[in-house]
Image 1: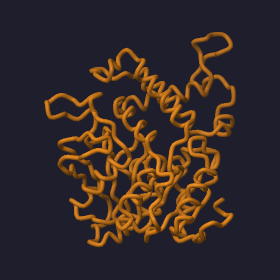
Image 2: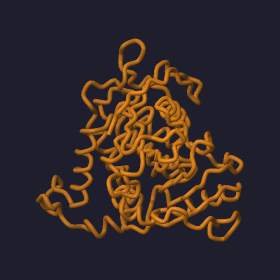
Image 3: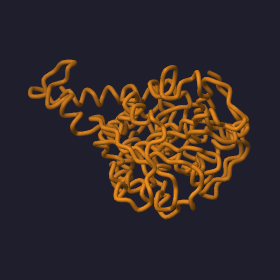
Image 4: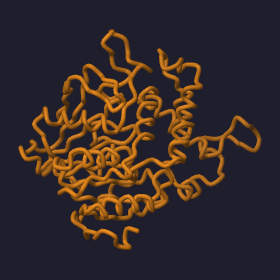
Length: 354
């Protein structure tokens, strides 16, 4: 593994604002990248991920995985606005203070432009595969929308070409939980607003997991850590204990301002009606059973739109009780869905994608 903090200079944003000096944290694994990119896999991370893709997608990426490091060069880039090395709200602005809430509104398109510049600087002008789930899948779609000649195969998992109103509403509720924490202080916090961020994570987790998983794993049992919710309001059910634990872990590793910025970027993503005329990139879309955030029927509809525009498109289903989180929770299952590589191209207008 090698890590690079790549300076890409000033970046003009879709909003009309600009960031004068941008750094992208890039992590490379495995083989040396070939000049034509034919052995390079770009892995785009989801909301709370990082460029260290082997740490969070082991089983799909890594030794013995679908993208084995003995064969592939795997590249990860922490997104613009993130908190794991790339320029974001916790970075220093030109005046020497943290950007904080002054950090400008960013889009997935801005993220991809920054990634493209960073990879080109490292001698990677194109990639064989771009793969990602959720926000990562949005990035893969945006790569093809902006630079289809730089991607041979885009694998879009558990996402589609826009975020529905329900998803925007859920992101709003999570951001409000952060904003209403007194420690948030309008984004100028010295101590992290852990209560608000913990609640935001709980709200999000309700969309990441399926109802079937919650019922099977927790039902209405008391917290395994102890207590009796029938006798004390302070005691919890097992599912409450789970959400609390997930929040406790999350607040130790993620920045609240980055959470606000990145969820807004997800809200703004909308490529409907903006599909490019057909190019050479091959698509594989993967819908996840029980996904409440990006239901598989909408993933299929998105695949149909790109197919109807003339692209080489394949759609596959990932069966899981995990819901949206399945691409992270069950990477071996995802690898099995993708392992044969080519699949069956779907002609435009066929009922398979309707």
